[in-house]
Length: 251
Image 1 (cartoon, helix red, strand yellow):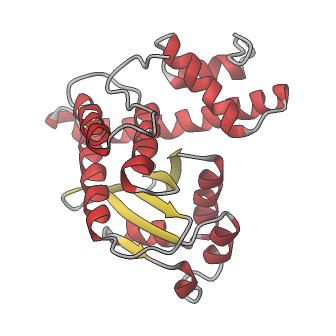
Image 2 (cartoon, one colour):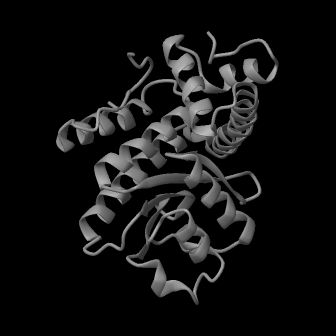
């Protein structure tokens, strides 16, 4: 399968790290000059971060019109559910990162049980023992967070943290690109559209999972596969699934 649209990130895990890094920054740069699917863009970024930064999983949160946060992309269903739990319980490293605008580095979650008493056991049950969260920011404006989860305790996070922040910063520039005279309006509309799109995609995943007795990751993979092969945006495919007009698993 060949990705269509701007900046596809290779999925082959045996590609040299430098090649994946170069392709990722090409993808990020493409958002500055081309129309692009924000949700698919962030989904690819989550997958690239897992490869580049040696993380077990990655997720991204974006702020909505009212300043609340929502999960927009994740490398696995378990990660998405953990991110949702953070939002529901109002506790965790990713929330601290976004609220402070500063990175949160936790090399061993066992050391943070008092700081995040509800989050730590849930993260452990999901198989995670360490977290790095970096803000998606442009100067003083924070629009979300990039979160990296690790299955084992970590040490020496500084190099990976710097690269994670660089990826998040460039992604933020892409999300916030707009004409200066319409900056505030475009920002609100673009972020809200991405959040609304994610709701539709989650509904479509549920429809396919129920219809074909598959897990949510497989359902999402089928939606992405169809969208790429037919040069369609994820939201359009998801709307067709929810409306009963398309079954990408059988297509």
